[in-house]
Length: 275
Image (cartoon, rainbow, N blue to C red; front, side, top):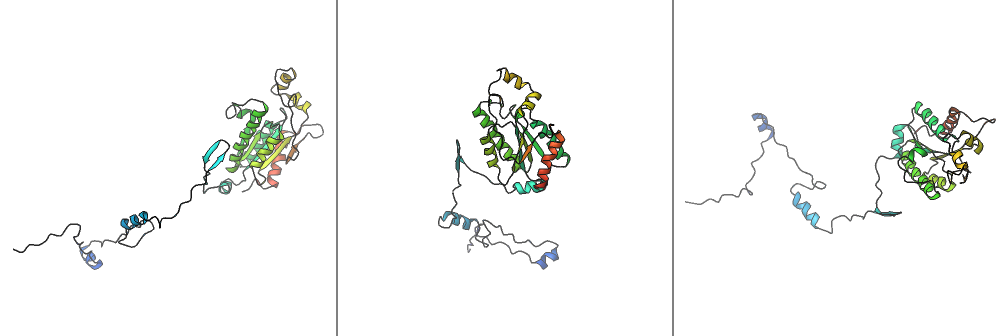
């Protein structure tokens, strides 16, 4: 009896797919050919095996550049990651330009008063703001810093970096700090290119600020109970190139609303209130 070889299941031919006409006659759909595209979609019959061959061929694999890492300060092997959504996209979403309004002046000069009044005016006109108040920040972010010169410098550096992030987010950031040293304020200005740093100098006389003394600090400084108090036994270096200067008018201090309007006019004239 002649013997017949049983074909291996792996070599067994596939049954031909029914034609469209035959499928229509039987009411069944003709199967469609599906080709899986692997690694760029090679021709049929050159699937995973072909990809494995390419992967094993070192001469054909693309050369990957090593990521460029940096050393910044005490941080080593760090890499800057870019995001496809940048400052311009966020500004278009908010309808404004991100910037930092840095209000500087003696204690009692009205920095916090102006910051809150300005934030309220901008909010009411549909603009997103955030206030970074010096005392508020020392409740958390800067709670580990004293009022010594080196700690004051670090205080301003940290606030400058945070303010830079707010501006990059498209937010109008209002920073309100004594920030007595010119070099520290200038260092913050350098962080924000394209005139995004707007310095507001509260140019009020020391006697006016001391007469107000809202926290009673001038009295303590005069009695020697506080050391290193700005304006008494620690210097305040007045700005020399502020974008905005707030002064007394005819011997009277301007109202919070008037001060806020002064800054608002500057923002409008320089295009910060539109994307």
